[in-house]
Amino acid sequence: MAAVLAAGLAAACATAPPVRESGPIRLDGEDGPLSSREANNTINTLAHKSGSDNLKRMVSSLNALSDIPLYTDNHVELLIDGPETYRRMLEAIGAAQHYVYLETYIFADDEAGMAFAEALMEKSRASVDVKVIYDSFGSMDSSEAFFERMEVAGVELMEFNEVNPVEGGNPLTLNNRDHRKILVVDGKVAFTGGLNVSSTYSRGSSGRPKPDPIREGWRDTHVEIRGTAVHGFETKFSEHWLALGGEIESREAVESEEKAGNSVVAILSAKGGDNEESNIFAAYIDAMRVAGERIWITQAYFAPDDRFMALLKQAAQRGVDVRLLVPGVSDSSLVLNASRSRYRKMLEAGVRIYENRHDVLHAKTAVIDGVWSTVGSSNLDYRSFLHNDEINAFVLGAEFGEEMEAQFRRDLENAQEIQLEEWNDRSLWQKIKEKLSWTVEYWL
Image 1 (cartoon, rainbow, N blue to C red):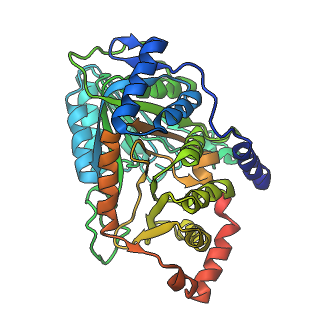
Image 2 (cartoon, rainbow, N blue to C red):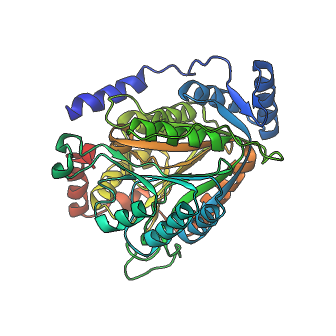
């Protein structure tokens, strides 16, 4: 079964057209949906300002892949590591007047989790509508009392894919998990990215050696979005809440007093366990196909299929600057070795690979040609492509792309580049671990 699904994913990518066909660009602005002419003018202007001939093709791909419109007039702020991200998220929750929607893979029963729980309960007691979706497997270490306390305070909770058979869980669907991270407050601000709700993120990354990097400050990335795209994240949360059997009040999009920013944002989500190709995966494929200058990827769990690997190598061979930043230490040694099993062929093709060996790298981001950027929950492995529910924001344009590239360069300062000659001399035991990882990587 695993081989059939993996082959299907590769076949779907292999038969995809070089340029994904798209109908008229669906673009929502501050005043609602733009006409076809207005949307084309907006994208043409963005492409001209960005100095990119490929941007319009990238927009066309995302337009074809998304089941909701693309959004203009957004301000997108890059948030690095837990302390800054949690501060901004808790500030947003504290300012809520109408509703708070939170979706997370891990909602830990620890100091950070309690800080979020207290903030949510305080708002619920103040008659703010508070809804939370959490993954049963990801949050299985949290106590029932932790969630019951929130429910007593009026917080509405939805547990995704209960793992306990006594409580109705189905062992056959244990591998399908809600890995998405979304926070929406009052239709005014949305957050998404790689961070769960856990004290694992309470300390920032340092870039310096530490006794126990698994427990001492992870390197992760989130974004804070203000503008029209907030409605898209609210739509995605609401669809999931309803699909899980909940009820939700229909709300009109919040009208802001002034334009939030200039960024165009696409939102792609993937449904795990449906045997369909991940739209997030497909967006990577399309963007890598047309990349002309740079493909810079930061990835926590890098174990993609052969098609993805072939496109990376082809890009490097045609002169694209392809760089991959991955963990040198990880909370999953199996995924770490699955990733390393791919190094030799990439290095031989000209891909430059860097490992962060001081902090656990948990970010899932990429920037291509300085104009196509993504931040989200999706890893580049079979689990995210086939098994998990995922969501990513795609930000188009050079303004945010420059921020992403600057952060990538900063991260490289704390990483070690892998050289082909040295890698070929690695120990026999390391090579054996890499080979063994192939046997189980589909399920990681």
